[in-house]
Image (cartoon, rainbow, N blue to C red; front, side, top):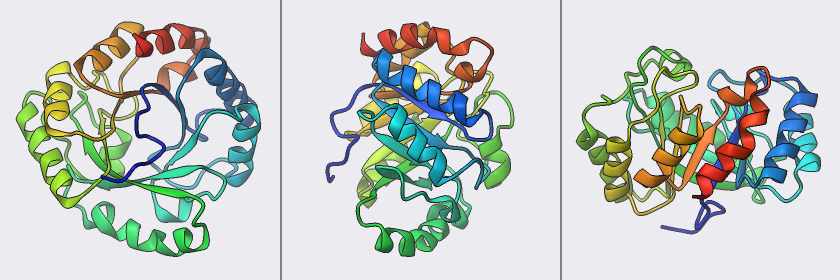
Length: 242
């Protein structure tokens, strides 16, 4: 697998959803993420174009100049040249061709125009988080069963054989339960590249559990959007470094 800005990186990533926060709030969260020791800023959501696009990415860069900014896009039309890299997500847990290859084809002109933006081929696995999430609704795909880690492992083995670079296990935004440790351990055994885990992670304990099970990067977003949620950021980043 080729190297990327994810290679060798471990800790907490902060996901900023432009639909769920003001520009000023996003800027302040980025500043605090950098100060508390987060390793990555993710920008995006599951619905598509939202917020201020390139203007927001520029503000996040100014707020956290030393922190890599990576886009989590829902579709090719959302791609932003103001980021360092894009998670080129292939929803390998689903069977909807739009999210397996079609959006990637539509993204080709963007990457031809902006070779400075790194495309990170990412095997995206939606894991059952207890209820229907935005990802499931938008992509019209069923999540992988939470109680069958071997199924997730098989999907990542296939992604590795295809030559994908990173993997992302996601219970979905607002999931009632996070991806379980057995699933993360099975994924880690099957996958040698960067492994990201997110969705339903709300506490330092759940961050530490994901890291102990083998996740390189633990993604949090929703808990930080709640009233006073940013105050827990220090505890989360400390847990991700443990």
